[in-house]
Length: 167
Image (cartoon, rainbow, N blue to C red; front, top):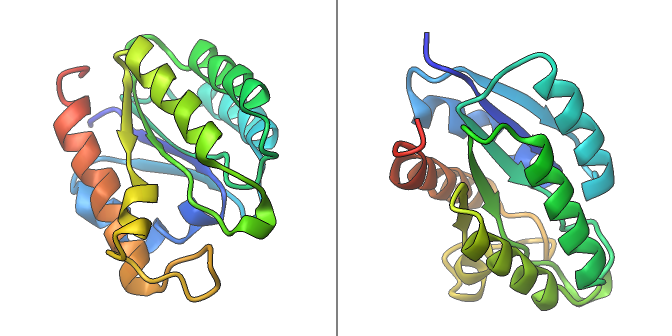
């Protein structure tokens, strides 16, 4: 059986659950996603799950519920990278959120920097998809069902493109 894909995230990961597993075909998907989850909460769950499974790929959907401090987010990214086995590919979706939740562009910048320095990271450019209006966000944060399907396709594509080399 193939090594599992571990998904750790927030409500944007929860919404992918009906779609991603089917798109990945034979891969086992282990889910640990909850609405409202911050990156520190996600790191606790990531470490707990990594004691149970050795994933080939870790999909992370965290940062949307964090504050706007890029240095703090960079530290959290480093903590995630340290926890994940060096043999695993990491698919991390960047952030798009409404202004009421705080500025997010600097968070995406530190995520891009991390990806430039760690070849395990494959970014999913969710922010671009939203800004290009490839998806609809009825509440300003969460996509509708076709949008969650599109996000799932983006993640599945990132796994196929970037993570097959890490396997």
